[in-house]
Amino acid sequence: MPQYFDAKPGVGSAVRTVTLTLPDLTVELESDRGVFSADRIDPGTKLLLLDGPDPTPGDQVLVDLGCGYGPIGYALARRNPDAAIWAVDVNERARLLCAKNTAELGNVSVMAPSDVAAGGQVDRIWSNPPIRIGKPALHRLLTEWLQRLRPTGTAHLVVQKHLGADSLHRWLEAQGHEVTRRTSRKAYRLLDVNAK
Ligand SMILES: C[S@@+](CC[C@H](N)C(=O)[O-])C[C@H]1O[C@@H](n2cnc3c(N)ncnc32)[C@H](O)[C@@H]1O
Image 1 (tube, rainbow, N blue to C red):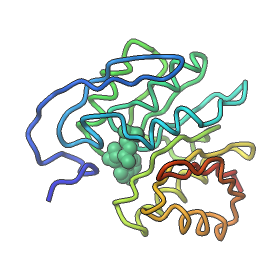
Image 2 (cartoon, rainbow, N blue to C red):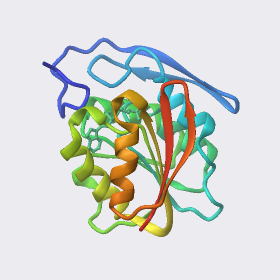
Image 3 (cartoon, rainbow, N blue to C red):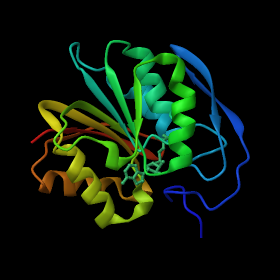
C-alpha cells in the first residue's frame, strides 16, 4: 500500500493548492497526491508553527526534518531570512514540491537524506516527524538528527498524543535529552528536545 514516506510515490500525480495561514504570513503551497496531508495543512504542523518558539538570534542552520511539500520550511525561511534552511525528506515528490514552494525565498536547500553532509551541525530542528515509519526507524532518524545539534541547539517536535507522544518523550529522556512539554493542546504535544 502506498505511503507518504515512500521514496517514489506509487500513486499518480494530481496537483492541488493548499493555503498556509499564520498570523504573520499567508501563502498558497503546491501539493500533490502521495505526500503527507496533501489536501490541507496538518493541524499538528499548524500548531508547531503557531506555538513553536522563535529561533535564537545568530542561529545559522535551521532544519525542517521531513519537510513534505514544505509548510514548515517555508515559514522558517520567511521568518528567518538570514538563516540557511535545510528541508529534508525521503519522498522525491515532496522534495520537488518543497523546492518549488520555497524557490522565491532563496534561503532553502531541499535535500534527500543522502545529500546531507556527514557531520554537518545544525542549530535548530523543527519536525512533525514520520511516526508511521515505525518506532525503530523513527528512533534511528531522531538519534541521527539530534546528534547534529550544536550544544545549545534544540529540536521542536509535534506529535499526536494517540500516536505515542508520551512514550517518545520518555524514550528521548532515556537517551539523555532534556525534554520540555511546551504545549499539550487538542490532540497534540509539542516537545522541545535539548542537545545532549
Ligand atoms: C508527518 S510528515 C510531515 C510533512 C511536513 N513537514 C508537514 O508538516 O506537512 C513526515 C515527513 O517525513 C518524511 N520522512 C520519512 N522518513 C524520513 C527520513 N528518514 N528522513 C527524512 N524525512 C523522512 C516523510 O516522507 C514525510 O514527508
